[in-house]
Amino acid sequence: MGQGQKGSSDKEEKKKKRDESPAPEDSHKCRVCRFPLLVALLQLLLGAAVTVVAFLMLAISPSLMARETPHWAGIILCLVSILGLILYCINYHPDERSSIQFIAKLLYFVLCTIGLVISVLVIAFSGHHYSQTGSFRCQQAGEDCVCRLDQEDPIARTFTYEGVSDCEVITGTLTLYFLLQIVLNLLQAVVCAIGAFIMWKHRYQVFFAGLQIGSSSSQWQNV
Image 1 (cartoon, rainbow, N blue to C red):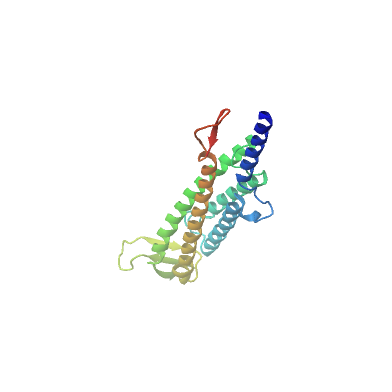
Image 2 (image 1 turned 45 degrees about the vertical axis):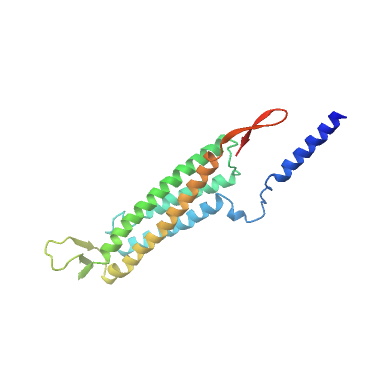
């Protein structure tokens, strides 16, 4: 009689725990919103936008330096997004269930952190050049455009942009592209920070915090 009551009470306890557990995620509900798919798609779109804007800037004048046209940053971030899509395709779980998933998650975390640093560097360079080109005083010199920060200063630094037939492109269009790079890379930095934080949270914020002593045996409680 006692064993029958004990068995029924165990079944009721298991059923209660099962009812209190969170419902499984519906695979057909907002699949795009699932991590890391949404983060990877945003990284891909922003990385492609950064690359396109950089090549548009390079088309203005071939004398622009690499730090002024950060197409390299956009390409790197596109590669980061591809790894995020691969991680989604191998059935992402917060806890590692295979060595492949562990390696992919580690690489994605590291690359998201690198992407964050790269985006901050591009923001710094673009902000500097944005303020600089906004103060330019330019003159046409044949097929080139020669710009100075102060026309009255004879020893002021001179910037020569080759292949520019209209100096308004430097003081107008190029300045707008620098501002666009600041906005895009700021968004990219936020997305990379979110991706790295979620990966860290899933990996390290789950820990054992004490003992739960039951009637029959003691077991760890995962919180």
